[in-house]
Every structure is written in structure tokens, then in C-alpha cells.
Length: 116
Image (cartoon, rainbow, N blue to C red; front, side, top):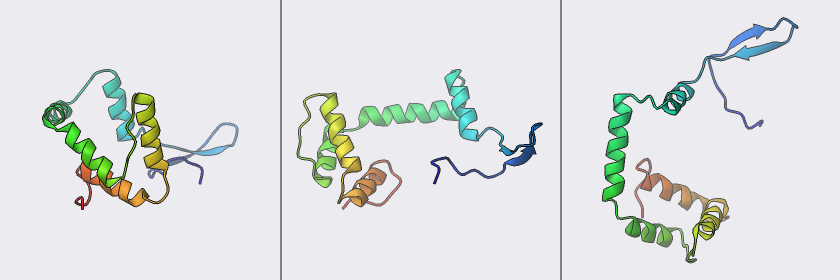
């Protein structure tokens, strides 16, 4: 495990010094990110972002936080962002409830199972 992404579609190449490597085309995600950095957005991306902002504005963040705290058994009350970050790291890296944390994240982001 080298902590690098596994990609398909590379082309084997031999350099002038005889070394062999693999050359990849730029990934679609990298192309999109480069466009976004230049503030060049496609219409579908603008529509998605607009809908996302509307959903965020209409969400009851307090109720969501209360639900997540109950499900993940978070009992601490952060006084500032540093304490909130520490709690989040404890939840993400904590032992014993990783599956529940993942399941909750998937449910909240609309990509997983229903909450209990």
C-alpha cells in the first residue's frame, strides 16, 4: 500500500535514459477542478450549486446536529471551532462506532441506508 490512487488506462513509456513508466491522461476530476479554479463552470454545475445552496438555506441545522449527536453519542459541548474540530476528530478516529459513524454520514448525505 503506497497511498496512491489506482488508475486504469495508462500508457507505458520509455524515457530517453531507459527508465520505464506509465503516462496517464488528466483525470476528469482534475480537469473539472482546473476549470473551477479558473471560475469556468458548466451550466449543470451552476444548477446543482444553486439547488444545494437552497437546500442548505432551508435545512434545520440545529435539528440535524441534535440527531447526529444522539446517534453518535456525542456528549461534549464545544465552546469554539477548535473544540468542535477535536470532537469531530474523536468521532471519526474513535474506536467502537466507526460503522455507525459511516452509516450516519451516508444517511445524512443521501447516499446510504436509513437512520435507525
